[in-house]
Amino acid sequence: MTAGRMLGWLILLGMGCGLGLLYAVDPSAHMLWPCPVHALTGLSCAGCGMTRAAHALLHGHVAEAVRFNVLSIIVVPSVAVAVVRSSMYRLKGMTAPALSLPRWLEVCGIVAVVAYMVVRNLPV
Image (cartoon, rainbow, N blue to C red; front, top):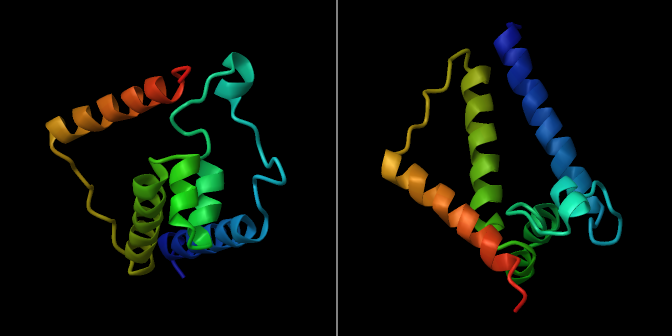
């Protein structure tokens, strides 16, 4: 077995174990790891609530995931698909082609994340 294929299997195994742990352990009840931004500043970063949202998505609770972090609806499935896609290419002994986004879409994404972080910290 080549090193690339071995890495592909290890990535898929790690992802499966991580998702299994996240499915079994509710991060709302067990603090797996605190957000360093929130711990240092008291502010919620754009990723705060993402682990709890991923747990909710794994259980099919989309509305609950949106309450934890609205970005999770896009980020969690996108990351999962990217990891599986990359691993499948490795298992075939190939290098995954680079995913490229138009520059305007990258800028819009960054602006949306920063705006989300600001809005979620407004005292409303």
